[in-house]
Image: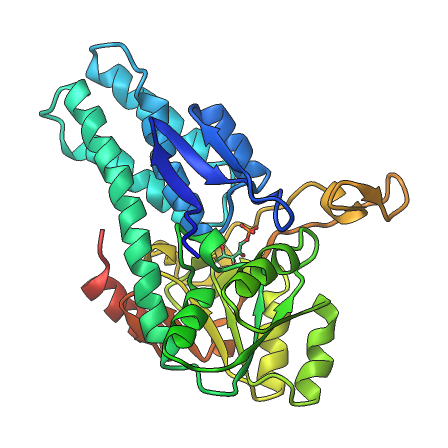
Length: 351
Ligand code: MRU
């Protein structure tokens, strides 16, 4: 299956419209930042690394039509575009990371004229894409060493092809393990309210020929009690320097359940998901989303009384004590995370 979630084609961003899956594989072509912001807000493109890759290209879309000659005006445009895109979804670190990478090109090359800068910024946004392709493969290689024959693995949300440019983090580990000839099964937590597990992960795994069973989110505890799962793997949206990890709402529940039942709980993420400004997870800003995601079934059918109050955080934070290991593109980080993340982060971070 050779799918690309994001591509740069004929001066436009081509993305898979993930709101149409699993029943329709359709693409959206985006040539302006307003449409890109909308695609990000509505989860047509989603998943931390995919957001970083799309937003890097978005910065270029936002500045490519700039006509002035004054450098200060150009810098202002870069800043405005960066803020406009980064504020679309605040929790995923990769989103602001992709934007910063492209904006930094403007900051670091003050001697260049604006046309030359624009080209360099496009080049950097394509580098972000290529780096993500490599990072996923690398996570897959490191992570596959943890997967054994006959494993039964539970995953949440979608940390696969659709959450990256083309291979995945948590699911990348599974794809690599399968390529190595290992045989295992996967439980997919449906992931209320927008069902990224049932709609996207189940679709990907099926296409890859991996045996997948979808469960309601609240089924995990009884599966664990009955010894039906021996590993849990999730992706991450932002990781603090002590290992505290924000990921899709419900991930924390699974981590607590895993600890109680003595099941290893792994997090897979590229170093671009780490936030060096945060010493712990309390500082992670959690996005709250539209109440209708909860009160309706995918905006189609109402399932709650009109006007009822809703609390709909998109992510939660799993404390580092609950995480058995973090699989990154530069290697597997084991506890104590406070010491080991800094070592990895400082020594090995690329880009
Ligand atoms: O709201 P979403 O679908 O963007 O949430 C995505 C997740 O929580 C993923 O697990 C995370 O971004 C990691 S993707 C490799």
